[in-house]
Image (tube, rainbow, N blue to C red; front, side, top):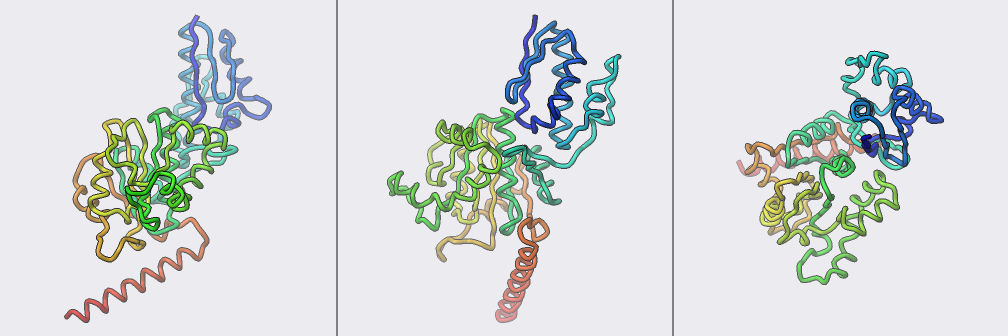
Length: 328
């Protein structure tokens, strides 16, 4: 007898089991020689090795489909399981779906909504380091956190590290930890908000308590090697060249990183230059590092936010033109 466990954490369990467990009953009828049990998001398969392997493979195809599409009818569920000869409808399995990244609280679908968000997801799958730059409201941080949560649920990484430079709080290694935490927590709030959307409160508390998910100011990254982790550096436009180099050289061999920022919202003192643009320029031709620019078309907030961003962009262009005219 063989026993195998299948994890359904990356999908909405209701979509897999069906109303009143209708789909789950179809699965059990398809494999009458197996003992198939479910507990939470785990399915336990017990029986002969070849039967267990076949059931696990077909469950994997269903999970793959649901990760892509989010919904699966009972008819399609049966077709993916195959006919009585075990033949699977390949056209159904290969359906590319609609860019779901992960399922959040209460089955909430977290997906890439815009062209550049979808491109960001594709880049993250092919590269180990991503620079995602764009104005507020374009979903760059939210998408990055969703990718990190998916990697954790898929067990691709052992932990998530979310960090920001706490410029407004006067980030300094001279602060005591308690003092620093009290000062920088408000600036880490967007990261907490994204996590709240994607992970149940009790599980998130467990992850935070056991440092599976760590949210900390950039100053705490110094001297560490960040491995087996999905790391997000948010608000990177507020890093100096030295700080961003320090961060990038902390990344371990089994880690992935996304660096997000908005070059129009630099809060550094006037005598300091943002390290983000410089890093993108220096690293632009290295394999495994990608860069994407999000813009007003990616804004997913109030409909007027797009127009506000466009208006400020036009004003910025006019100011630059006047500066150029004055220097001639």
